[in-house]
Image (tube, rainbow, N blue to C red; front, side, top):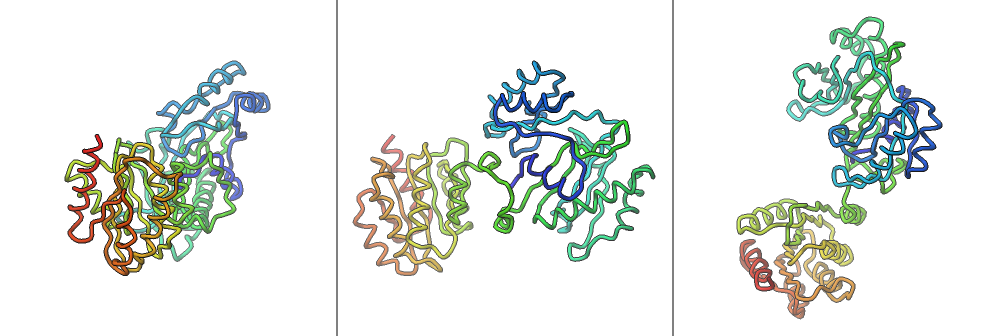
Length: 383
């Protein structure tokens, strides 16, 4: 999960990393009040869970109340990275003498955590990747302060700043592990005219699989980068990805591998998938019903393909969940074809239940191609 900047900076403050003074505004009145409270030039930042907000037009510098009101109104009208702007960070404007870059992340090629540092931070740091210095370290052993200080000096950090930079490296390394992060980044890390070092921006990406260990995090809905249906699926223990490319086939599969194979087969036959949903194991009747309800809630779908295997899951329980949802008037969609390919544990009992449903086309034998061709044919007839 990509934490919004205000949440990141609250964490930074807790760990003793200097941040600019600022407030979160959730409407225009609150924004102008926050600007008046600061009583100095400010920066307005749209709080969406995405990088590159400056390039997307989500950051403005303002010097007076009139500018703050005009730009604030504009920000609240925006959609950035498929998210409506519902909150704006109103923060004191920094006037940097130098902009640095500092981060901790995982190098996928080395399979190790690494500290990244550059004397040239800012908006285009990715384009100067060759200037990034790297310090790989063992995740099972704390980095020694002396090693961090040596690394800072090796990066040509001026002596008067090297101790502070090394200390910041240690702090973001602790955040990285304490919050099960994939990335902790400060860009830019600003040195002001009076030689203060301040985190002008903050980014923390937490491993979604570890969110259950961080229930105390302030993560209101406005901070979620997930589609509402993705959030609903996550709460139900399901893995859902909405695919925003005009897909018309709702997909529900039992297993990520089976799901990807089904998507590939749909693409081979020129079908477009609206979503990817993996039910996972330990599937109950209720969980299967919820999974189908979520897929049926995707507005643009013209057909549903359910491809499940009864290995650790029970075909009878899965069939009961399908029947429960289809018989629920709330999720009834006239003439919407539903193709079910289900084999495995208790398959005969499951088939017997599904054969009673007029809206379901049951594929007992054959391969994925048969199910895909069936759903695409039924959708084509409806068109």
